[in-house]
Image (cartoon, rainbow, N blue to C red; front, top):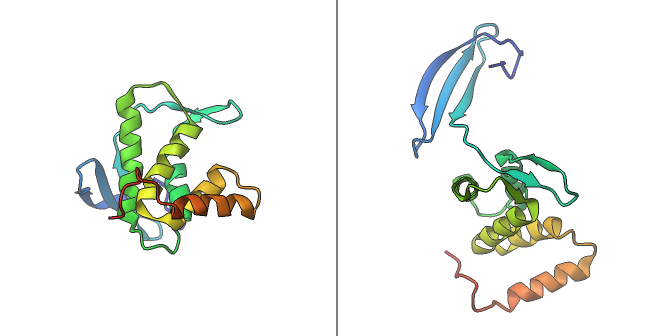
Length: 158
């Protein structure tokens, strides 16, 4: 593991702990060169489907991309990091359990939007604007009108 400060590869593990759910091991490490301490996480690498992009390209599922997208949508909103991680964990678990070899990025985006709709309207609209590639304000306005109408099948806010 390279030190994030100096790039040296020799370090020692100072402390190891299991994550809350037991699916991650958190390790505190200390660089033997500059004495910088940093944290790493280990998780079991499980087979996830390939993501089929809109242009037909295929790439490995990347949990970090989804996490980053949701974090951007939820920026400065009252949504905790742990809540966001639970959304990503849930999605990742569903994809693993499905046993599918491929999943479309459109399907992943649809699922993320569904979860954001339950959490926060503003985060939902932010994510939708990128996912649906809004071109102008009229598309934002239309999405907001839909939210204001509060369809009967929409789950209540927690």
